[in-house]
Image (cartoon, rainbow, N blue to C red):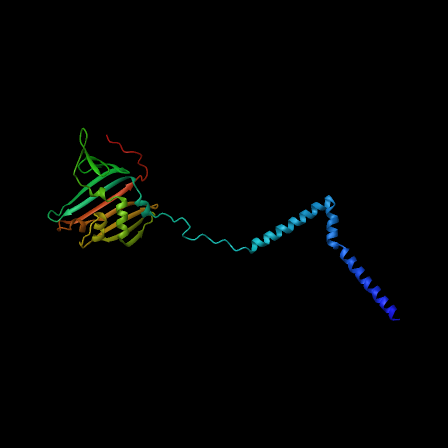
Length: 262
């Protein structure tokens, strides 16, 4: 009896092992089906298309979860050039100047008007008050006579207050007022101490007291006119004038092609 039980148990054990071997040998039904479908060209194309859809779906999902791009900071963006910065670099223009002064003794208003043009280090202009003509090359002023040009010691403060000089003076100045007009132009009024004015204009240290008033007119992002109240500057040594002002206007900026010595 015991022998029979042992034999039965042995047979059951062998049956279990046989089932396990069969289970291992039997392939997964899904992969079996996929393998059979792949063997047919018509189904193979469909399978490839399905895989492509799955791949694209996964890519789209990953992009949707990606962090948003960080916007450019102000430091990386191009900073617009201000009218004052453009004025600093301006070396090509036509100009009109009007210098007016009033001496305390005579109490009469006098003036001098210049009309000319500049291209880099060269300038030519007419003193329209006394009808004389001049030519400037690298800071040397030549006066034109009937036959030729000859150097002159005449001084023109109008020529020394060039755009780059005025820019550096305004860097030290305080903006006092801004007025916007209906035509789109803007008037800005600055004050700068005489001490700071002299340190830039003459590159010298001074303890002189007083202030210079400068007014700029802007239109279409360009400075087209600058006015200077220079009374404290010209009265440093002694009070000689009751008024001393200069106005310079600029036209045809960037349109001067060449200057000829005739």
